[in-house]
Length: 383
Image (tube, rainbow, N blue to C red; front, side, top):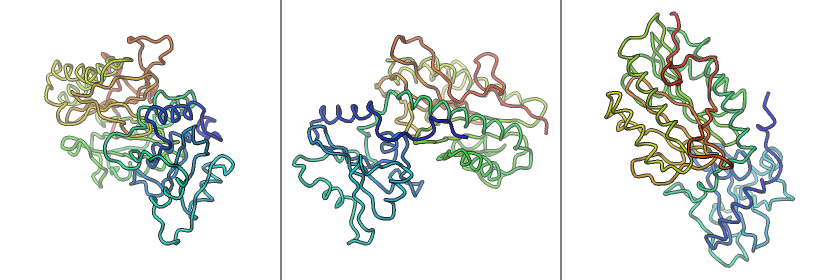
């Protein structure tokens, strides 16, 4: 059963309304175009406008007008989508202007819909939010998360962690294929209104070869890793766990996993309000070196801030933006053959300081932990 925070409220959060109005004033714009699904979900607390999950864009767009224009926001769609968006996604015609021409009417394009909606608006619209190239100007105003978003993320994190735990402690056995694991995982998630934009599963030899192992017919013999990005109401958490079916871990796997846990713990400890992302990453890179795996960070990105996108951007050695309050973060350090990943929430700015710890929203209370770091260990199960 979904928690109340997993049900969309009617109307637009006043905090988000003010953030968009402030953006219009700061950039001297009369209107902002929201085409990315991530930005539409952010503004509406989770409205789902997707049909094709493979696209960053959906079957609708939003025009948001500055306060000076004195006009309701416009939902741009077509007659196919109108009823569902009004009835299920809560685009109330009393609060939204809805432009939904017939889909066959001269094959009207999104640009033409925008021109129609902008009739009477003299200044140029910012089209920088309309494609997937370059930085998203709305990404900075999606942080900090609102109270409602924090509760939504906590609920999502608990559900994703429980499903992952049940999968690896009860369902997965030697002989089960990666595809069967993926099917069980995604089915359990969808039953709780959770999408899975990323599912990576590797067993045994494939775990030793690939950083992004999409599931195949390969069957589990002894070792399996499951990595997941789980999304509900537009918000996303990520989580990775490993299981091993034998009495004791091979020494090399044990050594590698203990090292990646130390890196992950260093990255968590480094993530403090106001710190630059490049400095957080540097702490993780230093720990890779201390553990004897100094080049591993070069072979896969280490993660970064997230929320309505799987990663808002990646932490790199040159990334000088800083950690923000109430920001979701997904660090995912890996050493070939193993990985450590959870989603953390940074501290609230009120009364917080740089030493305030982050909250792990995907924590599993029933999962074994590495004694030295407290990060998730490899689950050992009998074959």
